[in-house]
Length: 339
Image (tube, rainbow, N blue to C red; front, side, top):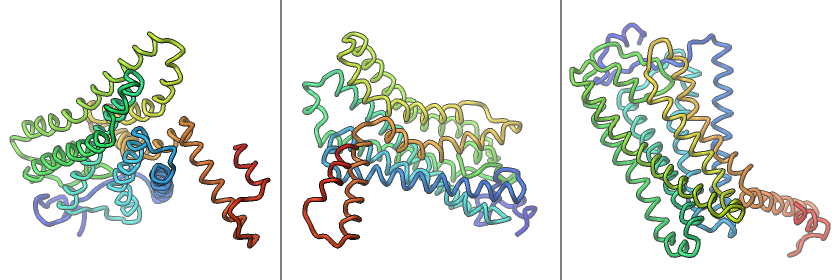
C-alpha cells in the first residue's frame, strides 16, 4: 500500500497508517539502527543484571533493593514497548503499524511509565522512613508493606493507562493518518483526531496522566524535603545516610525531568525533531542509564557485582584446571577479597 493511499484512510479502520521516524538518508538510518540496538542491549542486560543480583545476593535482601529489582524489571518492559518496533521500522522502507497495535503500544507505554512513576515515589518514601524514622523503619516498611506498594504501583499504572487507551481508541480519525514520530504516543495521536470534542478528551486524558505523574512527583519531592531537613538538622551524622539516596535521586530527576519537558512543553511543527529526541531520552536512554547509575553510585550493588564476577572467575578456573574443591586456591581468594 502506498503512502498516498495510507494518508486517505481512516485510523479507526483495520488499515495501516504510516509511522515516520527521523527524516534521514539510508546511511543515517543504519547508524540509528545500530544505536537503538546498542541502547536496547545495554538496557536489557544492565537491568537483568540488577534483577539477578537482587534475587540472589543475600546482602541485597532489604526493601530498598526489593524496589530496585522491580524498577529494573519495569525498565526492561518499558523499553521493550517501543525499541523493538523502532528497530523493525529501521529495516522497512514503509513504516506502518495497525490501529490496534498503536493503541496497544500506547496502553503498555503508559502502563509501565505510570507504574514507574508510583514506584519511584515509593522508593523515595522508603528512603524517608529509613533516614527520618530509623527505629520504626523495620515495622513501617515490612515485607507486606513492600508488596503492597509494588502492587499499588502496578495497579495504578494499569488502570490509568487502560482508561486513557480506551478513550483514545474511541476518538474518530478522519484526516491524515501519518504520525511524524518514532512510536505511537498519545499527544501525537490526538493531533490526528477530527473529533469536535478532541480538546475535552485531551484534557481528560492529560488529567489522568497528570494525576499519576504529578502525584508521584509531589510525594517524591515531599519525601526528599523531609530528608534534606533531617540531614541539615543533624549534620555529619546523617550525611552517610543521605548518600544512599543519591542514586535514586538521580534516576528520579532524569525520569520526571525528561517526561515533564516532553509533555509540558508545547508541540509545534518546528520542533518535531526535538520531540523525537526527547522521546528517546525518557523512553530509551533513561531505562538504560538506571542500572549504570545504581552500579556506579551504590557500594552494595558494586560489591555484589564484584562477588558475582569473582565467583564466575573461580568457577571457570576450577573447571579449567579440573580441580573439584570446596575452597578456591589461596591466591584467588585473596584476589576476591582485595576487590
